[in-house]
Length: 316
Image 1: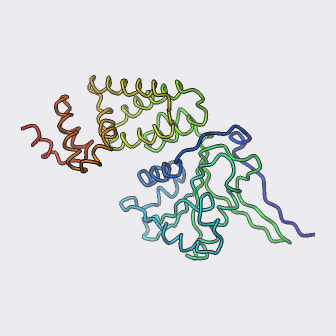
Image 2: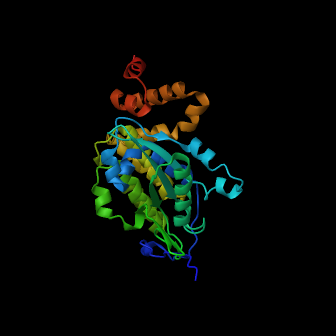
Image 3: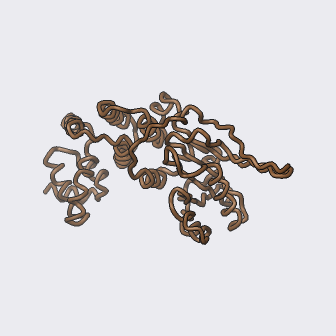
């Protein structure tokens, strides 16, 4: 008899089976922005072998437009989320060759079809176009359907195909390791993992305060800290207006105590006004206000991405 079966050996059973609906927002853009900003940090966490082999002096090259051409089929479903692979990157290697890696970041709790089948489908399309097997990574950021498999495996009349790819499952990551890590991506992964469990707004508020403290302890640039906190705030998605106001007051208090973490957030809160008045003009106005508050010109220059000479001119 013909056999046609898909392996159901699921490796993330602890995050599946929850039937509660969760509110959705622009997770797609959030995670893509994070990968664009901290690509090699993600490789270090998820595929350390590729991280070691990558020539990190050079940026990876996005192949998204090429992949859209690869998916130029008559099937309209293949061009729309969740049937569209999120990222296709060309990663330069130290030996001068390149490794093409498809990063499929899975954002949905349920639905969107079978992930392992989609991953295999993308692999076939990529191989058909480039004649090279891609490396692949699925980042599981939410609960997945109970029936979903951990990898693709199919047998048919004695022919067997097994396709295994890298899985980064947030629920399986260790909290202590994430919070003590010097890898920037781990702070956001920790926040995303917490967001799966947080039910109360007060929990979110307390977590954001903790996130500020964790970031402040790190020796990363203010711009990195700013972006990581912005990602964290979006993932936590606190909505209680009273707690949001308290969180801003907490940040203001940190600023008054000389904690530089608040400075980038002032720039964030002024983003809409900056856009309206013109980017540089708006930044200079914010910088002028920060100088009045006694903030160091060096900190302002780094946070606002302005030349230090420009900041010093404002002091005269």
